[in-house]
Structures are given as structure tokens and as C-alpha cells.
Image (tube, rainbow, N blue to C red; front, side):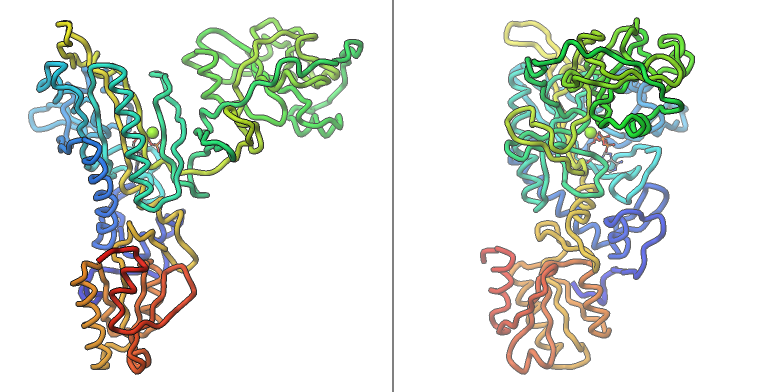
Length: 570
Ligand code: ATP
Ligand code: MG
């Protein structure tokens, strides 16, 4: 491709609403332009990257035995009413009416549409399993679209849905997709982890998110330094303390009330009383659909609401209001404690390790010291806190690290949620009609491209992992008006192109500095410079994006050198 003819409008500065680096660089590198909030046009360079991701995804999905379909993007409301999601989905679902006043929505995801297709076409266990996928625009009217392609309203997703006659078959396909996703993100050249994810109301252990590691990620993940354990922080488990760890507790030390005027927070109380936050027992009062409960965690820990909700098996969970707190503790907010409390008490396991604790006194400006769980109050102990760096791994003797991650993919065993509500049944070998077991598997195509930039850039611009780069080589003739430079450059351009290598030649009549700056910004892996000076020694100058080293290569060896840099066989 000739730069002079290419629509590649690079910019010095990014607009002020571009907060994260991938968003800024995609705009500055002329890959995307904003149309409306969360809606973007893809320019040629941006589309090339999207196509690279799509191609890897397609090849691996096909190889895994899935079949590509393309479902309609406009979906009739009837299907969504059958599944119950027309009412459940909320404002992210963009609804509208046609000229006949019929209701439709733009597809944010396609469980209903695919279930409808399959229930009409598949009748017998002999036709199962099936795994159908598509690569298509989705629309979700996100409340806060931001970060460019990372969280758009209109965005491209690969979504796949599988249908099975048995749980075992669905679980085998889940494993198949797990391996397929791992290959996809490996082939993209990304540093990623597959992490155990929240399963929500459906439950079960079959939900993994594929996270690209990057400091700007919206998710936190816990990984073990020793084994392969990795989980979304929402789900990450902590280890139960060994039973008997509290032997040797001194039975004689009693509890003692202390005056703590105006001291409510962990920081205030711990510095006022001169005790470590880890000896404080934080008491939170929650309202749930099963009544008011007290929840305890150590002062240096944080509660994990998702885990708490699951452990208590409740639907609603909110911090109690001031009046409720007064009613159950007899004190204003900030002085609740478990001693003498008459409501059910749930405590994190780590509370059990406290031997000489401090809690609220259930009285204004009062705390109690010398508190011992089990002796001074009874609670039910659960795993309900957030994992922190350095915790013991729940699976081995290693320690846990916390990383930031970007969710680029999600695989999920759905079970019969949609097949039951929508009547997607099949006749089994025993002649009985049964609902199909389903799985669903998504990848954010644009988000994967954005995540690649988050993970691979420097102050000058993007450093594309070669598999996702829009071109493989950028060829820079230093002075295009020089006839000899132009001739040699065009010869090299043709030789590389004939060898199947994707080349962008910067044939603009621009200063070298401008060309190098743009080259660094758009981040093509190999840069080849041709000038009078290099030609004089029968060579070109090579450089890899992201490395300082430059070296000369004989003109006739250019193709071979590029192949070896890109690990390509002729
Ligand atoms: P998130 O928690 O980030 O909102 P999600 O759980 O709603 O994502 P899924 O329904 O699992 O997402 O969608 C599958 C994939 O689609 C995600 O893993 C992500 O890569 C991508 N995706 C989801 N929402 C967006 C969006 N608004 N913009 C770009 N990609 C998205
Ligand atoms: Mg998800």
C-alpha cells in the first residue's frame, strides 16, 4: 500500500475525552473516528487490525468444529418476551417500532435468536451437538460508553452458542472452547489469563473470562505464583484457616469497654487505640430479603459483596440504613459490634484468627477491647472477603498476586435457561422430549484490538504484536524525489509484496522526521529505511518497532531478513 494514497490521518494530539492510551492511540494513528458517544467509524488501518483478529478467531472456531452463521441484527420483541428478557434487560436494550408499530430491538447478544433458529431446525438427538457462531455488530446502550472500542455502544463481537443432548457433551464442548480461546489469544500474541468468573444466578463452575493483563484494565484478577489458579476478584477464594490454629488462647483475659469519642472508621479507631487494623473486627449491618444480618471482617480486609451474596444465598443485599442500625445495635452508625447482638452474625474465616480483638460497643462513642470470637460471640464463618496480594492460594502452598485485566472473552455453560423458556427441545434416544443443554462463548473483537495496544505501546505510539499488525513492514524512502531512492524502494516494495508480505510504503514527499514519527505512532513491526547513504553501500537499514537497534542488510537479502524477523517460512 502506498501511504500517499492511503486514508491515514495521523494526529499530534488526541481529543480530551480519550482517557486511556489505546483510545488515544487509535485516534492519533488514524484507525477510528467517533460518530457519536460509543459509536465509531473504522478507517482502513483500523479495519485491517479488526480483520486480523477476526481471521484468527474464524480459523480457530472453524478448526474447533463450530460453524459460522449470520443472524439478523434487528430482533423482534416476541422472542425476547418468550425468554423473559424483554422486561429484564433494562435500558441497555435499544428498542424501537417499525411502521406497523411492531416492536423490535437491536441485538445486544443473540441467545434468543439462535435458540429460535435451532428449535425450528433440530428435532433429534442425532442432530446434536451443534456449535454455531457469528461475527457481527452488537448494540448495547451502555450507561457510560468510554475508552473507544473498549466499551462502545456499537461493537463487534464473536458470539457462539452450542446445543447438546447431555450435560457431559456440553461440558466437553466447554473444554473445547476453553482450549480454542487459549489458542486464539496466544495466536494474537497477547499476555492473558483464563480466570474463573462469576456465574451469576445460573451458578456452577463453568464460567471463565479471558483477561488480557494491563494496568488500565477494569477488572482485578487473582493469580497464584505457583500453580495455575486464577480467578476474577469477584469470585477468588481465600483459604480457611487451619482448625486448631487458635489453640493457646488465654481464657482469663476479659473484655473491656473503652471510650472512643467520635472514632468510627478503622483508621480512626486503630490509631486512637494503638492497635493494628488486623485486630479490629469490622461489623457491617446488611438488609437482605431474609432479614437484617451482621457481617464481620477484619479491619485490614474488605468484604466481597458477590461472594457474600452467594454465601448467604440472598437475592437482595444492601447496607442497612441508619434507623435499622440504631434499631438492631442501639447505637448510631460506626459503633456496631458482635458482642450481645441479637441478629444472625456471619463472619469471614479470618476473623477466627483474632485472639485479642477490638469491636464496636453498640453504644455511642464506645468500643470493646480484648474480644475473642467464639468466647464472646457466636457467628457462622464463611469465605466472604476480598482476596489480597500475598494471601495463601486456595489450591496450593503458593501465594496470590493481584493483576489488572481486560475481559476480552467469556465462556459460559448456560444449561437450559433459554431452551426451557423458549421450548428448544429434542427427542432423545429413549424417545423422550428434553430441553437442549446450551453453552455460549463470546469474544470482543474491537476490545481485543484495544487491549493489544494497552499491553503493547510506548511514549511514541503503538507496538503491534506482529499477528495483529495492520501491515508487517513499513518501508521508508528518505527522499522520494531522489530517482535512485525511489527506484530501489519500489523494487524492494514489489519483492516483499510478491513474497506475500504486507507492506506500507511511505512514499509521501515529507521530511524523514515526520515519516519516522508517524511510523512509531502506527507501530508496524518492521521498519526498513532506504536512502542515498544505504544505497551507496548496497544496503537498507532495518529496525524493529520497540527496539533501539538498527542494522544494515544487503538489498538482495531484504526479503529473507524480513521473513526471519517475522518467523515466516517462504
Ligand atoms: P463487561 O462486563 O465488560 O460489560 P459483559 O460481561 O457484558 O462485559 P459479555 O456479554 O460476556 O460481556 O460479552 C462478551 C464479550 O464482548 C466480552 O468479553 C467483551 O470482550 C465484549 N464486550 C462486551 N461489552 C462490550 C462493549 N460495550 N464494548 C466492546 N466490547 C464489549
Ligand atoms: Mg462477561
